[in-house]
Structure formats: C-alpha cells, structure tokens
Length: 334
Image (tube, rainbow, N blue to C red; front, side, top):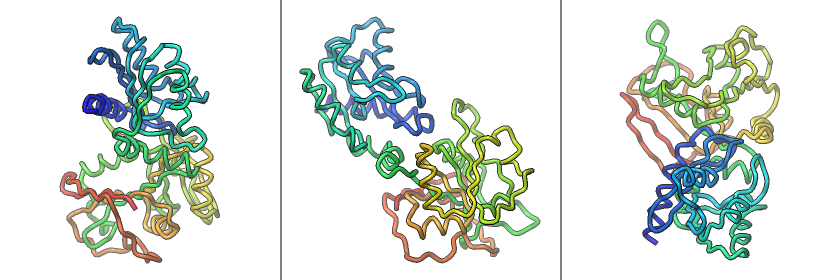
C-alpha cells in the first residue's frame, strides 16, 4: 500500500503539469513501474493529444524498457471509449500490462467502472481508490462539467478592506499589488473562459488575456460579455484585438441560460471577473462553485460595493488564505 501510494503521488505531481492546458479534458498523470523502479512517466499535455498512459509507455520504450508485465499507476480510471483519441484500455491490453492501479473512477456515469471491469475480465489485476480524494480535487472542474454539463464557476474580485472595488479618481487605479495581479493571470490560465458584464467592458476596456512570462501553449480563453442593451463599442479591445474571434456576447439571457450554452461549447472552467453586479447575480442564482477574493490593505470610501445584496448568506468551506504581495488571496469552495 505504501509503495502504491508513493507511485500514485508521483502520478499526481505529473498530472499538475497539465493545469489549464487539458480543458475540457481532465488532468491525468501516469507512472509505469517494474521491479520496484519507475521505467516510464507521462501526463496528459493538451486536449486532443495522447493521454497520460500513452506518454508513459512511450517514455518507457524511449528509455529502452519493455512495458509488458509492468504495473501502471494512473490518477484516473483509464478511458474505455473512443473520443478525441483511442481508448487507453485497448493500449493496456495490447501492451500486456500486468497490473493497473488508479485513484479516481471516471466521473462520467456512462463510463464509471467500465475500464476496471474490462481489464479484470482480461485477467489484469486492478486496484482503485487510493488517493481518490486528491485525484478528484485535481479535476473538480472537469468532474462538475461532465456531470452537470455547465462550467465550474470561480468568482474572482479584488476589493479593499471596506469592501469597495474602485479606487478614487486621480490616484493609482489598481487596488491590488503586482504579485496579486500576476496571480489573477494564473487564475485565467486555469480557465477556458472569462466572463464580465457590459458595464465592466465599457468602464475598464479590458483585454482579458493571459500575460505570464515563461508560460506558453495555452489557447486564449473565451472572453464572454453579458449585456442587456447590446450597447458595446466595436472599438473595445475585446472586439478589435487579435483575439477578437475568441469573444462571445450574450444579450438578454439569464446567467443560468448562458452557463448552459457555455457547457454545450465544452467550456468546463469559467472565471467570472466582475463587476459586482454580475457576481451578485451569479451568487444569488447559486452558480458559483469557488471564490478567489483578493483583499487589498486599503480603505477606498468609494462606490460601488464589491457585491450587492444577496438573497441568503453564504458559508465557505476548505478556506485558504494565501499572502500575495501586500494582499491576501482567499480561495474557498461554496
């Protein structure tokens, strides 16, 4: 058990490398072991490309090892159906893997447990459930989307100690510190869509792009604008920059309707960046799964408030407070 845990932990570390790149696919890591030694490693690198198991086997062969008779450790139950790529169960059978150990069962009710049954029927030893909680937490967004068919929603906002989101005119327009703003770009990296209201689009003229030095390979997340009037200038960055084809406008539709439409577009992780009105609507509609609030050491004395009146108080769980520059980031689940 301790040995299995160690190799699965390594597979989880590998899976993390796919953060933000695999959506709407899950992050998955895989390790091949024979004789107590790792002979191959891999992780799912990008949607539409080979899965973690394929990379691990290719890595083992590149190192000069045969994979026949090896044990495969993988963070999620191997796929058993043909999607963007062939099923990994076929590969496992073809390569004569002796034992498969996976953490989390496939969250898709149509597929859950299918790989384990298929592999056992072929005489392969299968174990599951070890480090399942960690493996499931790694793919909260994918698990949510595959079951509910709408995206996992993260509500992000930067606010002052007195709960305001706009600095007084004439000074620094930024509430949060440079490290906090860089962390906000990390949140964008983790997402496949970013949503704002029309008022924020008109007032701030944001680009909603990812600017992280040294990180590459991410497709620009969809940029979603919600508007009632449709009064949006075509000169806004969202409609005139090189990513203008990655901007979608939803007019006179409710947030639940919009999230349903985004789910159909295979958008599985949505970052709502504000402003306060759209965030309040999302909270009141019960659409928010996670919060990322940056709290700045400042008192603004301005309007509007970060949020309008909620219909019920909301309690958070799994709360983490992370110092980011001079700010505090609160991340928690609803």
